Length: 119
Image 1 (cartoon, rainbow, N blue to C red):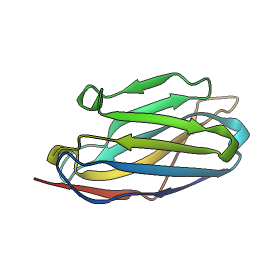
Image 2: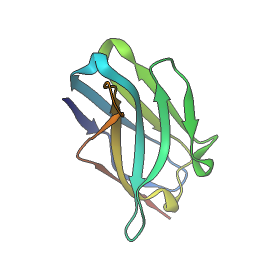
Image 3: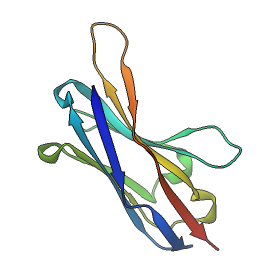
């Protein structure tokens, strides 16, 4: 099992910045990758950014150049630095971890943190 605790959401004006944090505990040795997803009202959950245990990153086109994902392995924590925020970034942001098994990867989710960007 993997437990994820998020922090750092809030209300910010357009153009501002926020940093989200996600601390993992439990079977952290088995985590393959961690990432951030978001879900806006009436929309499907979508990948924002993802980072593997080897440090490879992947970003949604809509956030490239504005968001940066990083991982501090010593603290089992992943961060999402969000700059130049836009109203369309408003959503609930969920931390995700993929746990390796003998079979398929198993996803774990945090409780979600609200990010609201005002225009």
